[in-house]
Image (cartoon, rainbow, N blue to C red; front, top):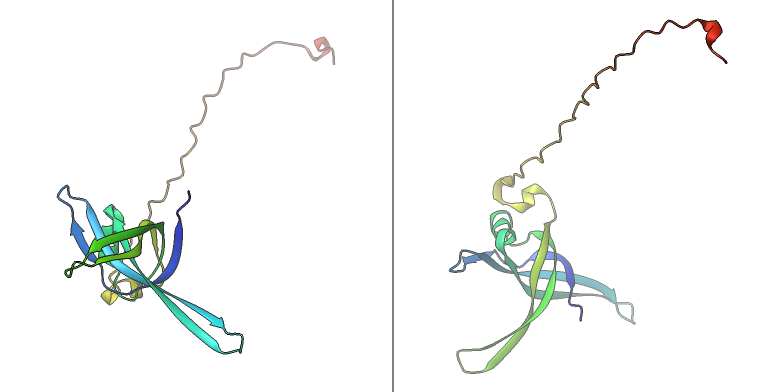
Length: 150
């Protein structure tokens, strides 16, 4: 079976970051995506899909540091079916996405308050100078041009 979801949307709330007892970061938030379409009568409609997402490890910490409500992201992950019992004893369920990869979209000013998003520059590879090969010593030959057959 194949379970893969790719969504682009805006975060519906700020990141809720927690750590497990073993120290792994877990971040929870929600994403909203819009779809515009035209009905058969020609009327323009728009529907919004809201879904909860969960990030793990370093991605959770990066999301907590740089993203906030309204930030635009692209996420890729798998659909998860969650079930639980509420306070009244009723069985509840929902679908959510367990995020494998996340890409922040939009401008740096949108990513964090005050434009504080600073991604360190990627190290530029330094061009390596090729080592000059040692010049082979060519012995001098005492050959007369008339002795060469061509």
